[in-house]
Image 1: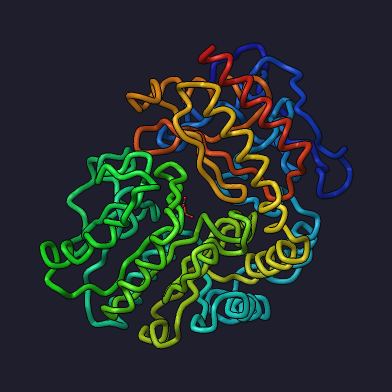
Image 2: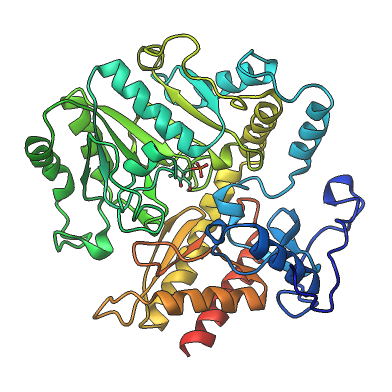
Length: 467
Ligand SMILES: Cc1ncc(COP(=O)(O)O)c(C=O)c1O
């Protein structure tokens, strides 16, 4: 039973929202109640009673409404969103064009299984048009994990080989195949579930702040790629189908590869006729200041996994790949119940038009300098801010005991996220190998003024916790 804390049961969600134009535009931060407020506490108690605790690890914010880069909780407190959901709402929450597309399509048809609809085929066409020429087919799915699973299936069938090389720290989803290619066995999402699927081996990703080879970005000789031959020689039976990697490692702590690493990796794959799968479920659709993150490195994948920001809202993902690879799968072997339904496809297509038409990648690129400047100032000001790293509007701030020891401080990191929440800035639960990285990923529609508000709040939260 839910304890009656005086707030009574939660009233129904008010009719009318930003989408109807009935409610005023969100702007903030506005803190009207203690946090969480009375209505939020009732809903959180319901969640604790009926949902598993594995569902969430976040600050106690119950979402009621969101618009652009602002989130209103169940008690009408308004927070600045530095999360974009979980790097989803690239076009901003409830973009009016996406809401209109949802309304119109809901009136027509939503699910049509694997029968084509105008919207699914146009979305596939669009994805092929905006990616490199070798990627000439697209399959529309539902989740990011589904894309990485599908990519591995395609790679195996197309090459006739079965081994996969992935990277330490990589995250590719929570289903079993996706977990197997995830490069952190001790993580809470992986530990205890083994043994995992055979045929996957791991190489070091260039996490320069904690380089396993003891290099720094200045002294880095990209040993990681040299190591791949050793890995193939020692840990595989020489039947490697593909290498899979994120372009920047999100869950590992917004880890960015140094210049030169990706081209070297791509060349290594080409020289050995090994497919390169790039997982941009998180890094795409303008997030890093270019439509796709691989564009920063001038590499081209054979298989590209997309999700999250592809729709800025509804559950949709896609794999874009070479037809010689994609068509290795026989008819009827790739569909899923909701994959590519007309509703989600139409919204994703509209979202891509919005991201390109409103030049949101360019906005992310333009604001990158502001984030870089402010976050590097925080690194200089506090001994406990070990490193700030990022591209566009994808940043990570790594917290340590001090710059000499680099010892991770997960408790302080979490305390800073909670302090930011109490000040009206929404951040996601800590990420990183050691839970000591704050992820900063606001919607790409954020203005310089709003970004400055958020950075000021973050700075105040750090000062509150570390003095
Ligand atoms: C790089 C990457 N791949 C795959 C996934 C899995 O996506 P989903 O949660 O939609 O299954 C994620 C999710 O965070 C991700 O960041």
